[in-house]
Image: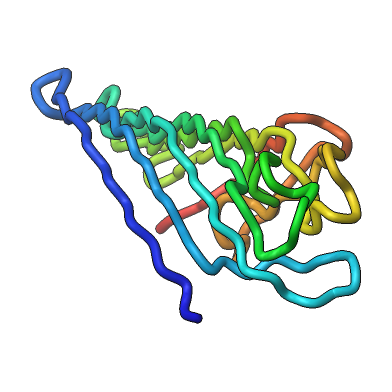
Length: 178
């Protein structure tokens, strides 16, 4: 059977600082049926899942030179049922879905007032992805893992610096523009 789902979303948006900064708050709920999961033998079984949560975001210009983009998301996810009788996955969180996710990016662009640095842009980003169940809840019930996370933006032409073992994965990028 095909995977089917139903989603609802509602939110508000508000402008600050003369519209230069915009904040949003969005609540969401998603229910899915026939989502494939692997059992311990590796065969896929269908499952019913639900996720609900809230996302708060802010983006825009703090000053003429400083831009920010930040989000926080809270997700409460659950496997409601599977095709297996007395399945231990029922009631567990959906695999690879973190309950808490936070990201913040700030970019500062120098202008002609600092003639020596005119055209230079400095960007820094930090992202936190909370604990989550590994990809197979049958093998790792209730075993949260900290999975390595890719940088929040493609690293083409940038030097990415991450701190191993940290719960926060900061990425530092230096972007020199002409």
